[in-house]
Amino acid sequence: MSIPDSSSHDAATRAQIISQALPYIRRLSGQTIVIKYGGAAMTDEKLKAAVMGDIALLHYVGVKVVVVHGGGPEVSAMCKQVGIEPQFVLGMRVTDESTMRITEMVLGQIGKSIAHWLGTHGAPAVGLSGKDGNLLRATKFQGEADWGLVGEIEHVDARLLNSLARDGFVPVVTPVAPGADGQTYNVNADYAAGAIAGAIGAVKVLFLTDVAGVLRDVNDKGSLIPSLTVDEVEGLIADGTIAGGMIPKVRCCTHAVNKGVERAHIVDGREPHALLVELFSDNGCGTMITQ
Ligand code: ADP
Ligand code: MG
Image 1 (spheres, protein in one colour):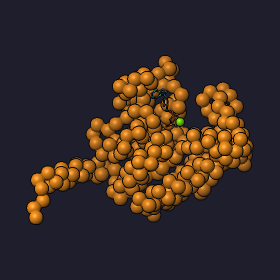
Image 2: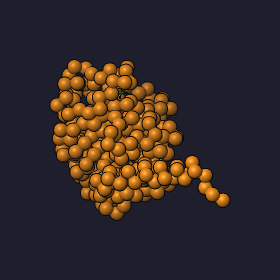
Image 3: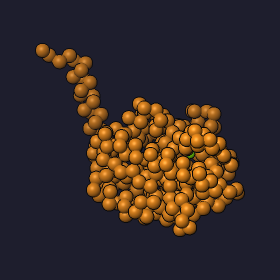
Image 4: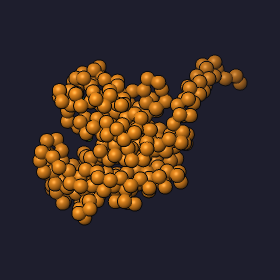
């Protein structure tokens, strides 16, 4: 029986597409990248499976991936279930002691299940928090208000991440960090990803989020800014173009880039395989931030 033309053509096209990834794989193999995983890509089953598959693929072509995950909505949902009404000041969660305990439990569980899903997709992974192996140390976040046990990262000790990567494990980091004062702090996952990327010498840090990237007008999907320099970012915050949850994201990008990460990318996690599009094509997607 002969194979129909269309399917042989499909197979050839598929082979061609795979072979076009070779230059990107050669460049990235052996390098470290950090992925901030959150939003729809973490809650939608299909998107989740696609991200797990993409990370497994990166793992198999020799890219050392570190995952840092979010989970704010899941923390809020659990707080409500146990009768704590989540409080926000200037867009940021106020973390009292009971909220911190719930945060650590909920985020820890999310980290472990991401590690499990990655394992079932063929990338053996380990869920850990900033408390493991002295990975993170935080101090109380100082700002215009008092957010309680919200921390900012003071120090990253990357030895555990390096050991895991060397032995072929994908670390999945839960953004909870101890302070020298004995407290446990809730750290914004974007900040954790940026700080870790800077500390481990990652070549790239990618933030999966629920928008196309940095937009010139939040209400206009077509106004995507494909690339920005560190200097341009502060201007866009000052003039109000970048606001809300996008501020920590771009600040983490500039922090990472200032620490030597070549490129930081904010990509649309609602698009299946956004990671592969960004990493394995010239045009990429989302917003890229460089020096
Ligand atoms: P994540 O859950 O991925 O951390 P956030 O909600 O914290 O996402 O941050 C992304 C949000 O930032 C967007 O959904 C949007 O509402 C807001 N935002 C503010 N300014 C901009 C901008 N210029 N471009 C894109 N998003 C922006
Ligand atoms: Mg956010």
